[in-house]
Image 1 (cartoon, one colour):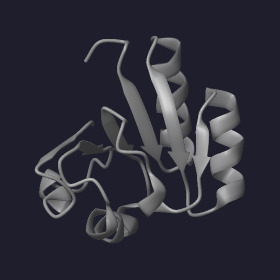
Image 2 (cartoon, one colour):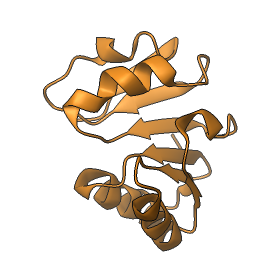
Image 3 (cartoon, helix red, strand yellow):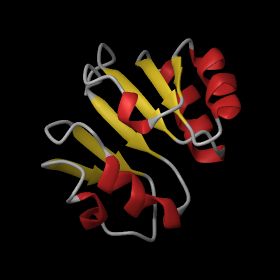
Length: 112
């Protein structure tokens, strides 16, 4: 993936925050930040020059990659509700298989 690609981050915790900053510093455009706590999404989105998103279903289909960085117990729910079945989606969990994202999209993987 080259730095002209856009990324939407799902999750605003430590890993999502650190990856967001590292990706932005590497030249990637962070398009959106989603969090179950909108205040947290807004805070991180402001730092990354991105748009905060309150509802998962409102994520823009224009992102090239959707990067999920949430607690392990939240992945199943996100995968089930993810609105863009033809988009590239990846998770950051070291303890979950990439198969947790099978229901989310036909293009999925893990970044660990």
